[in-house]
Length: 236
Image (tube, rainbow, N blue to C red; front, side, top):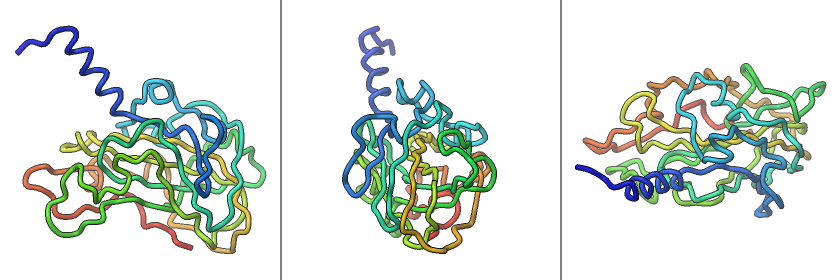
């Protein structure tokens, strides 16, 4: 079967529009005034072209590379913190949030968060445990949303943090390496915190393997359960 140049162009546009990025943070329903302020600007493959990351062993799996930070958002422990998507989340899969405490002697705008410093602070995953999970089912809480958020743990210690959002697209994840990650890292200052010890701590890259069950999706026979990759959410 042959396709006309016009049809191929329309297909390419459709693929691009199905991708997305997370350029702004939102606190208690109030978004930042512009893109890439407290959110570190991702590489051009995402910040301009909306592309994702597929290699879990790449350094891009951390914060998708990009520029140093320019601002910091202040949040209180217990606030609802999230990210605004440039377009609706058009691929089914989980959306998860990790946080990493910035050492007191480090510049939040430059700190790279390497090593075992990240803990999972929130996860929007499939909520259905019985019956077939359709790829575009409403049981995926982030699907077709333009904002995704979580509650900052109430017992988190006060201080500066990087906050990492990842939307894991599973529509091509029938084989290892097929999952696509749409990632951003924001910069926040947490106030009014407690004395908890967040964990377990993981590294990016390192937290995921390409053949993790949470990074694979079986279309036939239909899956009846799903568990997102990574550690358990630390609730404080």
